[in-house]
Amino acid sequence: MEKTYEELLREVIALLAPLAPEGRTVGEETDFVADLEFDSLKVMGFVEKVEDRFDISVPLNLLPDIRTVRDFVVNLQRLLGER
Image (tube, rainbow, N blue to C red; front, side, top):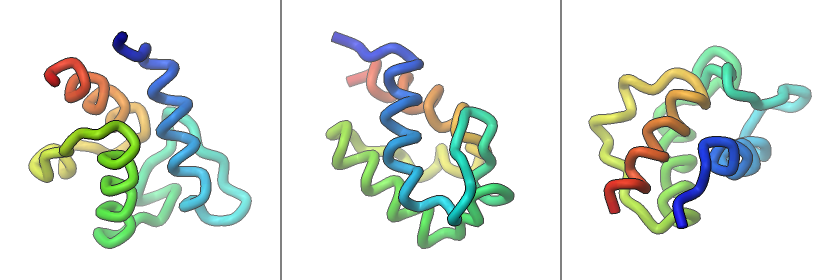
């Protein structure tokens, strides 16, 4: 059964929360670089967590177009639908 956008959003936020700077809340509009201070190493660590959690492979060529949590979840939902 496919997960809804809202279910995926909750799961992605749960994965991101421990990686966020102290005092920052994570939501749909959260920007990976501006709000979460992600660099390439943090991005790769997060992608690895997502791949393990959802048992998928995230193509690296998607990453340059992803700025917000919403962007990521929309792409994740598409990837899960393609399995």
